[in-house]
Length: 108
Image (tube, rainbow, N blue to C red; front, top):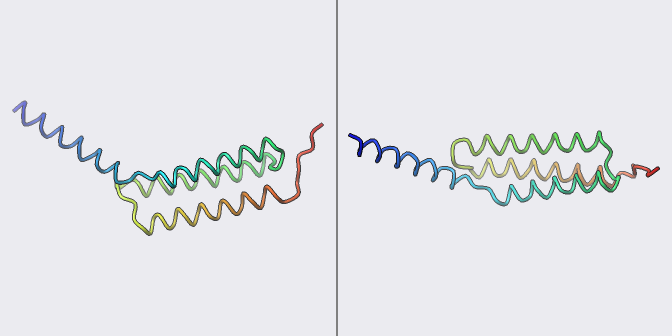
């Protein structure tokens, strides 16, 4: 009985690990990290004010939620990847527009 329980537990752990392996998204994660770094750089340089940065960070959190929901079943479909990619494209455009809108934080 003990051996059967151990075998079942081991198989369950392996299956769980395989589900998470299928849902890995290094390209999406890297792009998210790059965009978050761009926001931080914009704040540091004064190209983004606090309100703009908060709005852009909220957009990044929304994309993370979309990604988490897509990963929840263990597989990210082409449709889900396309939705995440479109959201990242939209966030990137907003970020570029805000950074180059001429509002510069003046250093005192």
